[in-house]
Image (cartoon, rainbow, N blue to C red; front, side, top):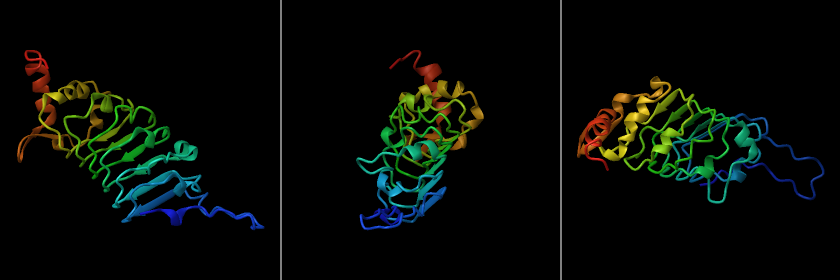
Length: 219
């Protein structure tokens, strides 16, 4: 449950020659089928040129370990982060803060239910975001999607646990005001649950709530 083998060896006072960093030129790191529960900042301290990090099909319950934060090299250099097929249930803003160069974030097939309002606000370069196959529901706040970069070209929120609730009526106007409506992928699979084993197309239901129900029966 640690990435300690990847850590850069630290020189001792008795070293005569400089200890080379074997990872400083590495631009891509892939960790798969591991028992890692979280990433500690010390685990990646030697990867100063890293652009792509993939930790998939593992046991991540949180992206970063408690007390850890991204290095400046990560904030300035990472362009692709893939955390698909893990056990992440909650995203924390401080774990992703400063990733201004990130263009692709893959979070599919986790257990994500909670996303802070401001999580994506600082990801100005983000073009692709995959949140499919998680546990997003009617408690997702409008700011989560409304703060996405305007130049986003790919967004997948399908196969979540959306409820057919009026609490999501805001999603109708949000979708209508998208700068690029084509960015929303797998729209037919963005469904809401209204009974056990019964679902409907989310945006169709939210249009009904927004245009017909709420004007006469406001929350």
